Length: 238
Length: 371
Image (cartoon, rainbow over all chains, first blue to last red):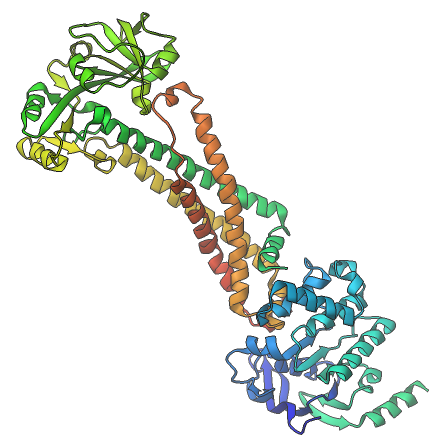
C-alpha cells in the first residue's frame, strides 16, 4: 500500500431537499491505495451518499473529495473521471435490459476509445474472470441474481478502475450468491490491488475488510480493526 | 457491438410506436418525393417545350397567368422575325381541348412551311402539306390512344382531320398532342391573326440574350423566356407548384419533427434510469445526446427509404390515369432522393434535440433514482 491516500474526504457536507436532509455532515475519510474498506452504519447514515460522491455521481455541497489526484468538488469533467477511475457495483445490478452480458460489460469501454473487436475481447476476458463466459449471449432477464451481479462486477472492471465502489452488492442476493459475489470482489481486489470501498449492513461481510468505517448521522463514528470485528462476528454467531 | 447496433436495438424496443412514427414520416416524405418528381417532370417538360424545334427562346405576352392564355399578334411576330440576327421565328398557336380521354390535348397550330424547317422526328407518314387545311400530324402517344395512323381520320374540336403522319417527341405534352395548320387552329379558336408565342432561333454566332433583350425593348408588352427559371413570366403554374412543393415540404418537416419529438421524448422518459447507468459508467452527456439523435436520424432514414419508395409508387400509380399521363411525366432526379434523405435527417435531428437535451440534463444520480 502507498502512503498517499487513494481517496481523501475532508469535512464533506451533502444535503438534500434544500438543506432539510443532511446526508453527510462533516465527513472525513482517507482510504489508502489498495485498501479494502467496509462502510457500515444504520440506514440513512449517509453510506450510499458517500459512495455516490466518491463515484462523482453527485457533487458535495462543501468540503473536499480527492480521488486519484482529482478534486471532485471542483472537477469540471466528472464523466472523464468516472470513465477512467471508477468501477461501480450497485445493489441492484443496473444492467441494460436490452443488451446481453457481453454487451453490458462493454459499455464503459466506449469512452476509452477502444475499437469494437478489442472491446469484445476484453469483455470476454472479464466474463471469464467472473465465471460467466458461457452466458455471454444471455440478457439480464435470462440470468440469476448472482449472475447479474457478476456481470455488473465485470462491467465495473471494464475500465481497469483505480477504485472499485460497491454499494451493498450482496443486498439483493441470497446468502450463497452473496458469498460468491463477495469472494469474487475480494479475489479481484487481491489480484489487481484495486482500492475497494464497500457499503454493507452485514457485519460478516464488513469483517472481511482491512478496515471498517462505522458511520452515524453523516460522519464517521468509529473506525474498527477488522480482527476485533471478526471476533465480534464469531461471538455473535456462536 | 457498435454504436449503430446499440441505437437500432433501442428503436426495436417499442416496435409499434417506432413503426407508427416511421409510417407517419414516410407518408410525409412520400408526398415530398411525389411532388418533387412531378415538379421536376413539369420543369423538364417546360424546358423541352421552350426549345421546341431548336428554338433559343420564346416571345410571349408579358404577365400571362397561363402560357396558353398568351397572345402574340402576327404583326408582332413579323417584327420579331424581321430583326437582324433572327434566323427563324416560328409562331405557334396552342389550343387546349379534349381529345378522347385526354382533357388536356394540345393542338399546335403552325405554318406547314415552318414545321418543315425544324420538323419533329417522324415515326410514320409525312409532314403537313403546304396549303392543306384539314391535315394533322399526331404525337405518337396521341396516335396510340386514338388508334390512329397515317391515312386514318380523327375528330378534334368537332373538326375532322386527316392524319398524315405520326411523330415522336421527348416532350410529354407534344407527344400527346398534334400539329395542325395555323389557319385551321386560328379558325377553331376564333383567334385570327394570333399565335400563343413565337419560338425564336437566332443565327449562328449571335447571342440569343442580345436578341431577347431587343425584343423586350422594342415590344415592351412581350417578354422572352429562355430557361425554366424564367417561365414564371408567362405562366404561374410552375411558381404555384414550387410554392406548393415548399409548403408541403415545410408541413412534412414540421409534422415529422413533432412525431419524432413525441416518440423520442417517450423513449427518453422510459430510459431515464438507463441513461443514468450509462453516465455512471462514464458516458459523457454528449455521447448520450449523440445516441438519442442517432436513434432519431436512423428512424427517419428508414422512413425516408420507405417514403421514397411510396412516393415513386404513388407517381407511377397516378400515371395510370390517362388524363394525367397526357400532361405529366415525373422526373426522378437524384436531387429528389437526396432531398428526401436530407429532410428526413433534419427532421430526426430537430425532433430529437429537445429529447436529447432532456436525456442529459439530469445528473447521473437523479437519473438513477428515476423509476
